[in-house]
Length: 108
Length: 114
Image (cartoon, rainbow over all chains, first blue to last red; front, side):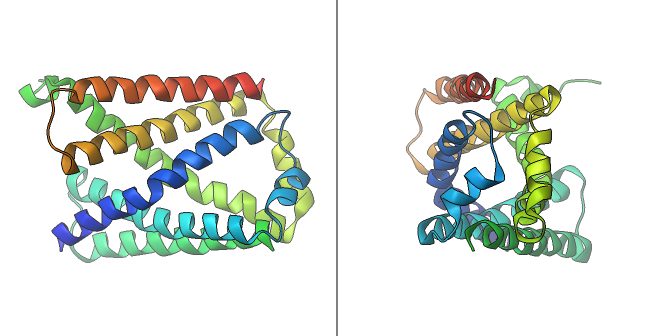
């Protein structure tokens, strides 16, 4: 179980690495001259590629973030058993739902 | 508090920084998603929020977040290299470079933000 989760954490990191680098670059580019809703939406609305990019990003970050949180709770705060599982799943699903909703909001 | 021997290792700091940056980022994400979700329900609220981000204190927080994201990705790449590539003596150099490039990213963000 722990070994599998460890591997899942590393695989999600590998998938996410290029996405994060692109996100960093995009932020530095997009912030120039300040941000407006219209500016963001003109870039993202109706774009299949941004939908795919951020859709994948949200799915992978939900896995990576919830597993990271789980590791911290387990190792630093000694949380175990059902409580650990409930928090990790709750965080993962919460991130997934909020994240996909955000992607929908900016691409549709 | 006594500092245990393994905590004197400089890579201990890299490990702590990775955990801490990851924790802050995962706590930040719901707020990030919520704000973007405003485009769905109340576009003027999104613009109002974006205007609020012009506040210098918010800018400082943003620069901090960019730094944390950068330090997490470059620290993470270091970790992946460490675990999945053959071992080398360059580990500390890479860790230092991860921080250096992260500072560069945060400064680049700062230059464009002001």
